[in-house]
Image (cartoon, rainbow over all chains, first blue to last red; front, side, top):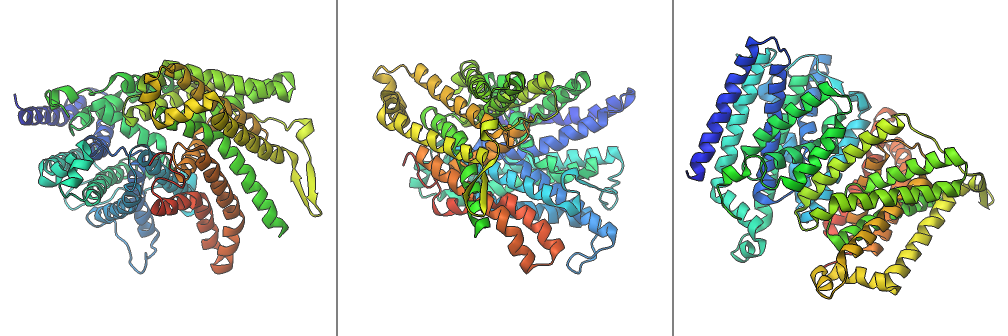
Length: 325
Length: 304
């Protein structure tokens, strides 16, 4: 079976599972099922975006939590002002998702542009450290925002509103998140198979060769980085609406590390693998937290094992189908 | 003027402290090509071992020994159990594995010692302050940290430039495979460098313990600052680590002292207060961004 078919097949199976799962869970009396699935889908959105630059461009960002938190904070802060009846630079504010979400995504794109421009001057280990440092900077800024709760974070009084979709309804919210995930995966798939995506991948395989063929690396890498930032920001927006709460914790480096772990667990450079990774990782986290408060003592060694033995990830071998690169 | 000099000394002290951590991290990266996040954990282990030993025996020197031994042994354990298998792998896997080790160690320390921070008294012979010149009394403990930092810098300079071990370290940083092919026992070299880095972390931990609370999160907080230091200085270069540490130390301490003053003079208090807090914590990252714009591979890049 060709790789294309494997991708389509795996994608359809996953989609079917994610559509049916809430219905099945609703038959049981497990109330935590739908929230768990919602978290998985939101995380999936973030890690698919991260996979776009790590798996296809070898740009290991250790700071993607900054986009996750920024997306959430922009939505929460604007909502906060609207509810307080303040004006924001003379604008009375709104609670409409159709306006707030694109604004938040724009903020993420801008941050991605600045951070990406600076970080992409380097490669390899410096890139890892610099993205981490910028994420940490965002974290400290969020903690210092006393007006928006500082360390304690900011509650959202309500979710955003959208015409004809009730975001307050957990079912509607889940299927909306799932729809966004599907659209995003298809979009990423389109990108990696486009001319742009092929050049981007060529830069990973041999930068020198690509440059000698006349490619200027920065625009390609920067564009991919910004796209990835926007996707992660969207996940942050959904998270803020899901939890109705944003805290600086969304920007911690442990969060960035979690994203990296999920991508690796699922399989680098497969787009679909990370979704499976998210399901396993979040599911495991749920089980471990029920079992013990000190679940990190299990999760830590798990990460070590993933790093030592998880070269291809869960779905890497199958989805890449013996492709070597 | 007095305030300015005091801030300079604070910057020097913070810089010396950062250098203790950054030198090991940059050596490990320069020679082994490994990005090691557990470096902050060694520092935490050192601080805990030191503080607990001092509480038990009352002797600062016992604490010093315990901190360096504890951090060093844990370093060797981490190297042989995990890091050794990741030398030739992508940095991504090194990040993941060492992140996992951090989470594990943090939780294990919480289980053993508890969540409450431990405080360590300043040893008698380092308590009090000295009058450097009329009007400026500076705490002895902080001066001791500066002296230790400078002594370690001198020691590392001698070690790297004037011993056979240092020669191998420099050669390893230049061309790993060639050194290996010439029959040098690389496993032993790697272990020593990794262990040395961990011992220096332990030293930093026990020296810092009396100045701040010994707690779980102390390792991560300092690790990221250490990263900033070696990115500014140039990854893999000890000289870079020294210069980077001093720069970061100065910017941080001068920023803390003067940014709020300047901002309150320019802006209404409520705005200035929030903005200053954010700016001060972000100042070293801004410094890093500037350095990167001019010198993408740091001030003293180890390899061209």
